[in-house]
Image (cartoon, rainbow, N blue to C red; front, side):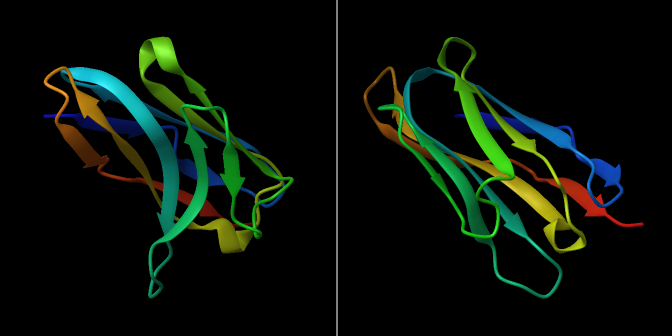
Length: 120
């Protein structure tokens, strides 16, 4: 079983920066995609940023130019650097990973979420 543990959330002011981390552990052979989602109160979960093993990066329009996703494949870890934070970025941020075990069986895992609050 794959476990994803997020960290780095907190309370910040508008315009501040924050860095989230997501560490994956378990019998992981390969991670094909790591992504960050978020869910604001009363809203659906939405994808924020995604990174593929091939090096592609995808961002929601609302965060382009402000957020950057990166990965450390050796550590099975993903990061989300968030700059110029806005109150509308307030949400629980979830890490998601897709890949395969050493048995070559696929996995699809979610973290427990970390709360980011942007408020003056």
